[in-house]
Image (cartoon, rainbow, N blue to C red; front, side, top):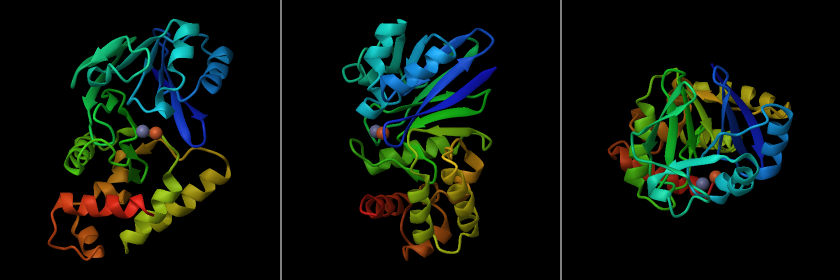
Length: 254
Ligand code: ZN
Ligand code: FE
């Protein structure tokens, strides 16, 4: 069985401790920093077999070297980022499989936020770690890739089974929700969601994971092909990528 614990790090980052209980194999996804992860591991599982990095940014790899040193951990990341992921041992290509104990993971290249960004997808368990590509109700900034690349990456995730649980790298949900409400008027689901988000955050609980089905009906960045969104932006005749670029530009200064 796959067990996932959320470990808050830095200001608003999430790292994840992923445990295959059957074989007692442990991975940490995107360890932002050493301390919180180490505290969790010392209390509970006492070991880390692997680190999975979605991309090279410091807030996702900052704990790599110290954890590797202490726990003799193998670091797994994209072959494309072999020069940028600190301590990388296992370099994966697009569509490559990786076994965590008896759990099958597949990685997909999803460029846009960075050129070497990947996601880790466990199909049978319906779980995906999306790093800074897809957030709850938002998406990452386009730093290194093009808008078309980022849109294609989001569309790849969109095509997964709708009951897939999305674990993303940051707690940005509330601000993302305000953005969605502002630019997709008349989406009733968003107002309903607002209450839930505020109540979660007031209890200091994460708003993730989120289920893909829910994101498809609320996350405006996954809805660039929806007429209601185009209309709401006054861009009825624009293409999906034009809508995406417009939204991304608006969000960058929101
Ligand atoms: Zn990032
Ligand atoms: Fe980040």
